[in-house]
Length: 352
Image 1: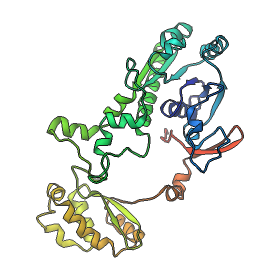
Image 2: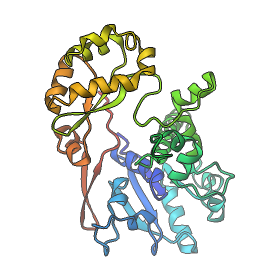
Image 3: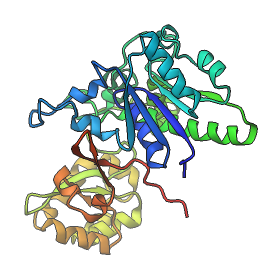
Image 4: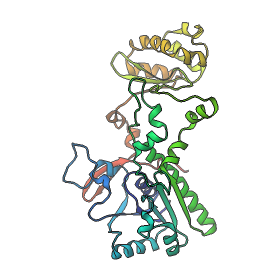
């Protein structure tokens, strides 16, 4: 779909490379530029079980697929000219320089626009172009309120187990790039597209932000529970020790749940007749649901709830996820520097 595009990736770690991989999946030629001696820092972010001698890590592979790799020292005259030559033939440049470093290296938008007027220059920063703070995902999760409301009352603040701010910023930049490409197609003009990790994180707060903005409610740590809906996010442990999660969002669904578990009496219990009352009495409700769930095998209970049109899902570990044929269909494989690698596709939408 984007086979006619050339992308120069002057980005490392997760967010920028994720955008590069997305464009590669859509057919673009993506050239990733790395320092000869250092490379992308994530090449060394390895699990204990990984080969310590290899310069490729699973983390690196997660957002690097379908790319060409060039080792160029951007601080040398030769390296500067080499990257300028690449950019002169490119359509998109991806960057995530620290504030001011793009100008020092002569790789800022104004400089490159003079070299290639219709260039799309896509930039990710941490806290914005004028803030020099180093921006790692966990710091942004803390600053943007994600950590405060994630976890349980007992756990204290907890980061998400993914670099979710990086991923959300990457999605923002992808959308901006595609719009800039459309604009260029219509007008012939290039553009600078930029997003900060901070803005992407705050923009993701959605209903939790609005709960504060409109109702003055500061979201608290309630685990997987939903602050507005019950039973939604409640987990039930079955007789085989495996767990399911509920996502009951309406009275008909709640009635279906009660009937499936043989708890029809709860339908007329004043504590559970409305969603609002179920939120108030959700602890008591969970205890009653758990008593029944503990008599079921997980797969049998899930099938019964599916038949009753009650939203529920199995809580799976990573091994179980990729045992599913549908998840396997999303795995991309390739050899990088002779090493067999795997990762999950990021462009999973369909256009027909």
